[in-house]
Amino acid sequence: MVINFNRTAAYRCPNCGEISFGDFSLFELSGTKGVSIQCKCGQSSLLIAPENKNNFIVAVQCIVCDETHKFSLPFQSLAKKDCTEFACPNVMVGLVFIGGTEAVHSAVVRNEHYIEEVIAACGLEHTGKNGVTMLKALDKIQSLSDEEKLYCECGSNMIDVEVREDDLILECCLCGASVTLTADVIRNSDFTHLEQLVLKRKK
Image (cartoon, rainbow, N blue to C red):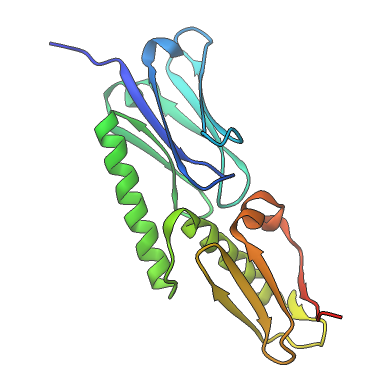
């Protein structure tokens, strides 16, 4: 019987939106050592670190809500499960996948298909690496609208939203004032914690 001590981890980078993969050995998690898997863009990483002899902590910055989520990963799951998945607790989108290489890749593909279905259900045409980012933006825009904190400086709160592949455009239905939010701005700014959004007419 051959025992495979190698594992693969994958996560979605909150900076560039890409899925990052990394390989490690269970031996690298011995003692107090941990494993850090960094995205190729160099702006984020996934941390897997021992909490005690029976449990590990998985930490990652969330692309959806910008918070750093910490998940509990029992050693038995890491050692025996084909793939363990962790999702954002606020929006059920898969963030981290850990297990055997083939199982992790399959789980990532399933999660991408799920995201595409959610995006299609929202009436959006574009997916790709910005799919989750646009869902995040729409959720925030809807919250601001519900709280009457999305409006134009002309006084109108009738705002049209156009979602494109790399950005979305908010336009006032009354005066035509607009603002463009790129996927990078949505991911890399404090967009999730925005308290209000006011469209301003160009001078």
